[in-house]
Length: 121
Image 1 (cartoon, helix red, strand yellow):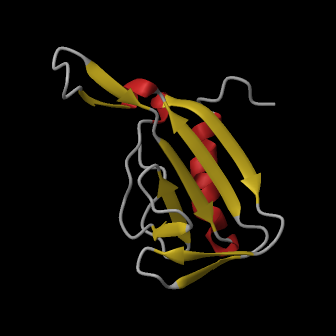
Image 2 (image 1 turned 90 degrees about the horizontal axis):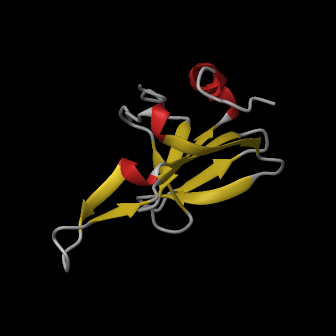
């Protein structure tokens, strides 16, 4: 599943993103939406400012929509260097910031997510 396609108005962060930095979605990201264990959807209520990975200012206006995923622990695992017979499981997260002009990309992902949300209140 491709939750977001190339866009200059969609940003994201992961576990590995430096603090207060955003990554511009300049390529495709493929996530197995069946591996999502937690999901939050919200809208920024006030303007915010962060930095891109290359240090440029990125303004996140109020009404930027945000989708935060926490993936299942089996989504990311690797061998334990001290005990090769064991694997370490890491909780990965992804947070996508959809600027107001990228509402179509947001709605497309939301439609996909609605098909897998169990407690869609």
